[in-house]
Image (cartoon, rainbow, N blue to C red; front, side, top):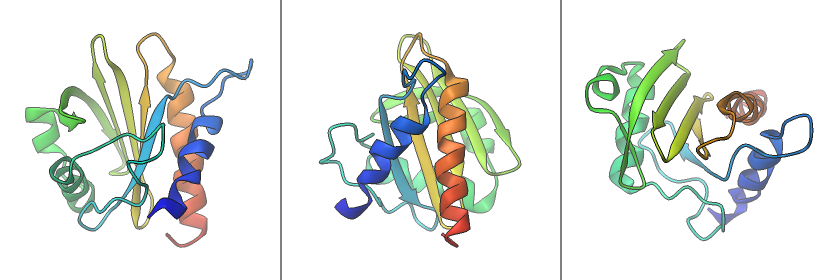
Length: 141
């Protein structure tokens, strides 16, 4: 599992703006089938989803049905984020006032999840999660 932890560092780097500042402070990768963690909680910048949070999110992406997130929100690290929108069954955006925003993007077999702190630009985080998810797709993952 910890072999995937370097992807957290790469994700944070991919979320930089033109001046080199990253707009992502935490991230993780979970499996699309069941939500098993690919990255470990030991990484300093790990987004620490509970097994239940990961399984719930993975089930929505697997089924491409986000109605439960629309109705109840998205839970990450025990915090409830308001579901903003979903695109093409592969991208979910969520926000919590005072806590920041989440970007979740699926590849063939995984979901890349990144946290954007309050006051930073979620668009840069969307770009970064997209880069990692696209790379995983190219690797047939």
